[in-house]
Length: 60
View 1 (tube, one colour):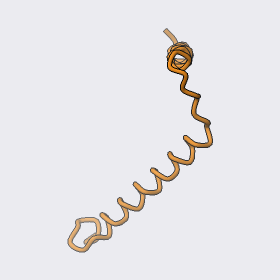
View 2: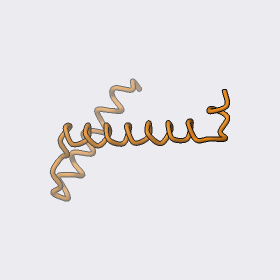
View 3: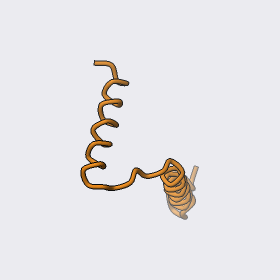
């Protein structure tokens, strides 16, 4: 089965489940904002780990 068909079926089933429980669909803007904040937080943590004194990354 083509991957796009799986994604389409997933979206259809998710919409059915949301309709059953009455939960509104999240907006793309909210997901994008959360994803962006999470991504920058992970970058910040990675930079802190990489520049910590005594790490291999700081020695090179």
